[in-house]
Amino acid sequence: MARVLIVDDSPTETYKISQLLSKYGYEVLTAETGEKGIELARAEMPDVVLMDIVMPGMNGFQATRQLTSDAKTSAIPVIIVTTKDQETDRLWGKRQGAKGYLTKPVDGDTLVSAIKTVMAA
Image (cartoon, rainbow, N blue to C red):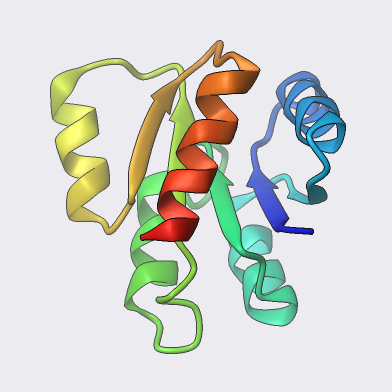
């Protein structure tokens, strides 16, 4: 069973995505800040990280850059899942090391497909 870490400050979004992933058989870990997400990723080594961008403190771009540049966590693929839908945000996310970029609201099939794609890469 693949383990997915959701880093999002919205309890509603976290709940929705957690429920969806659980239904597909994924084990879900959650963190509500970028800092806690990095800490949890280092401790638990999930298979994939789903990263929101807009969060208090460290934003998702900064957290993604830290995860993808750290030797311990660089192999964990990060998929940005956000409401930010500008092309510049997509490009910036990729430059920070994200392997995928999805905009909310995201449907289950799209999310699971993205997770499978980055895990297979």
